[in-house]
Length: 229
Image 1 (cartoon, helix red, strand yellow):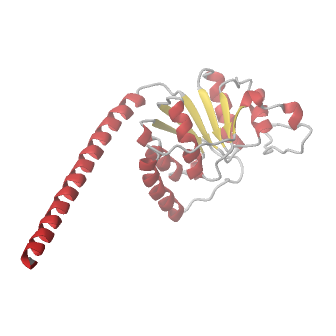
Image 2 (cartoon, one colour; image 1 turned 180 degrees about the vertical axis):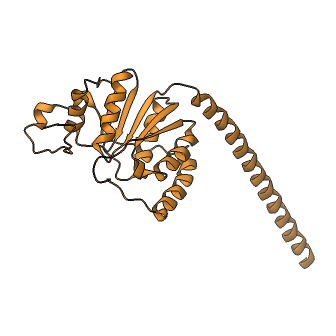
């Protein structure tokens, strides 16, 4: 009886090891297949025209660039993540006579990671394939690496456009911050395949009522070349 118990225990261990090995092999095959498929998707997306301008908030200069681009490409969608006050963005687009019917403002994000966290579901919903990412040189390489990891995992090609600042940069970079954000981006690249966060603060720029905002105390980033006041 005692020996039979030992044999059964060893047999059970061998079965568990076999199942574990098969599970790991299956996972490895799945991951390799997914990587190959996603690489093909990215190659296809890279040859497609830019279909969305994705602006990381932090400077009104980035929104100026987006307005200038929208004026030249009126059919391209613009998504501004936690940018300037909505009336300031509206004033920028009005100043440069850029169309606003394709411009969306997201105000849930509180960090660079959040910029992607809250907007990946929206970009997927829009079937975006090629994104022009607008940020500042001082935001690199962290923002670029995060975009390539998080958007690339969705089959979205990223073209980074750094816009020079004319004032004090709105963010300070460090290798520690970069390392932490890249690490959690790698984790979220996997989880975001099934988890879709929702942002309740998404506003089309066409809904921004300047007359209402003018009754409130709002301020725009004042730069002499913009002359928003």
